[in-house]
Length: 511
Image (cartoon, rainbow, N blue to C red; front, top):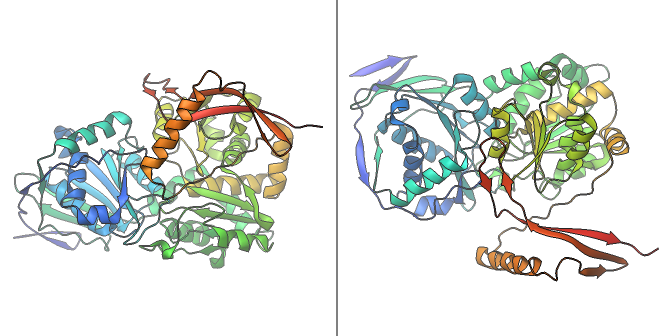
């Protein structure tokens, strides 16, 4: 027996199998899902299956049959294997429909966009963001809720609790899906109604959303008109490549050479897909040559960005969100909606605070994690926000959005007709300058790191610590304040603690 749907033939009556398993104790999702070495998923029996089952178990059974899950990832190694498992486990648990990006590819911002557009019950994103990929790299599974945003702590805690006691999972092991062909594939699942898998164009819904946010005619004039600027966009072999090619090159007319490293790769071309001065060094060096007026790099799953001006002028992410906020009238979306409020994560510099004060807008300082911004957005309190970790976004979706940030910057360039450097210097002149830097410590032993934090906590809460002076060269620093950052969500009253220690220093330089 067969069903024919959109020229796809799918075998009738797929059997559900119940597999006995053992729980794992280390499947606690972080701020962006469960991230582990690929080998952890591959070498531990039922590891991925357990976590996928734990995610789907949080979806109310009454919502599953009529509900849709969106699935996509950044193309990294093990993604397609994980998608087939999601298909098989979702079908066996009564999910009625999956919408999946062609070949599994869909950026994190695009997943959020599609969830919101089709009113899905949620989405599963296969990514470890800016972490390296490949057989020896990292892999991640992340759950987004019906708002399009990352699952809040209440949901991730529930996933973790289920994972710690899981004894079995349900799966349709014979069910196989063609990820390469756009269209619908329908299956009859034992005891459930028909199960539909729809493979969709990875870019189109997201591009349609951007057309409603930005003035594409003005951007096309900037990128391909008689006085066009030269840009260089580096997708770093991540998921943004197809989006840049279709939107920036094909639609907005920027020359093909404007976009590099645009074919998603399972190991990101052997590189680290993190858009910063270290890992995007090729872009930095190219920009230093002076041939290009604007440059940007993106991370593996497309939610982070780095902006550069001519001659490699670097815009730190704390300044980037401040500039976009100060120039919000350059973006038609905000001309229509206005700006309800601004927000930044605690580690981000206070450059945004200066803009909020000058424009008399509410400013929120949150715990790290985009889900905290999402709560404020859903409550109508927040329009623009950013993190020090190269994430920038707005309430158009519930994720940070790398390509959106770049089009926001290009919109500002089109409006002001100035260089990136001149815009940045004008901004500092008007709002003041906040100096900021971030240090990344990679491959650190977690036990040793925890001991260091414990030592720091002991030191900073010693009564004698505040007021102490420390010298380096001709500079003397005095401890002004020391505390642990704590965030109380103004929407739901939840409290997030223990993120980081803060030490505030006053500096004195001898004359």
